[in-house]
Image 1 (tube, rainbow, N blue to C red):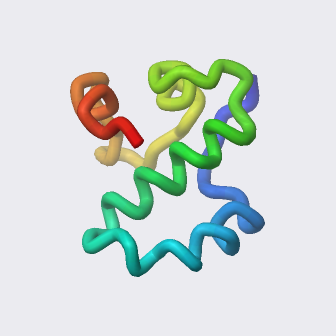
Image 2: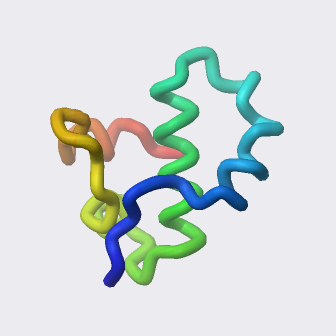
Length: 71
């Protein structure tokens, strides 16, 4: 599995139309990562998607936070 280091440009471009739905930037970023994982990840579970993503230092997501943020 290749780790994701960011949201692919094509997915980010498609997600721009939904930006106004999310009040907070963090929520929009989370959904963008989730959609990227659903489209590109081999393991489409929340844990599989989160395990494949690389977060900048200090910005990881806990397993508990992932379970709460179901989309």
